[in-house]
Image (cartoon, rainbow, N blue to C red; front, side, top):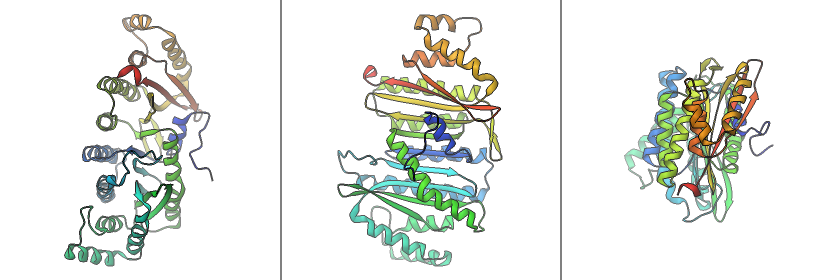
Length: 376
């Protein structure tokens, strides 16, 4: 089995998007967590509930589990060794909507000595039915058996109760006495158990999400959003970005400017596409954090009838110098003003890719590099 997501046609953006193409939402955050970031993640996902007209009961269950998950990650970050250079030291949060359910995964670094205790807690919870879990939760509350990290597995109990499915988990040994702990939860659209829904849960907990995480690590991706883009999502992504990117004020300002242009370009010019039963302005956005540069990538659907014209425009803008672009922007009807703004703010040529999806649509992705050393 391949360990990472297969990159198609040398187009990582489309490959990440295709990985979620039967979803209406995929959101991945990889980095340090705090309460402010958690709030913006919750707002981002909550906005998408409205886009897919989610049932109130399902929405409440997903939201409750996300709150518990994000609190859990935030509490346990001190387990990260100081000055560690480990490929998975960042926390991980993934939520995705598939055919039968929402799938939520969290990940964080743990000491190997904690593995047995965590496994025992989860297996104990998984051995109980709904009523037994309810009574078990009451017992823990009555006994008051809490630690400063959130109690004797009370959060896990409540997540299991709300989801109505067994918790799944994995450990990946990183060496030096540490492992990466993945916890997977499922919130089905319907309570009825089917072999198909259980197979999907198994697939996402045992392979798909782990492959996604390895792809994020391999490509140094710290923020990844795929789904219907709108103005509210843009604001929440910007707020998360402001707390994730710890660089100079000059670079952060430039990143902000380019990101706004990228996402506004999607909002203004992307063609609507239907995934499942939901039609909307689907887009992808992610940030790659490297030693010397940040790379911002966006992707969206465009009609094939527009591709050749877009290619000519993109090449024209990419080949001009700053003075020529200023002149173009001051014409009476400037074309590609957003791409010109991106080119001016980044001071680098962009790269782009069109991947044909079918007879009507292609997936357009664009990558913009921002040099860290020039913006200290």
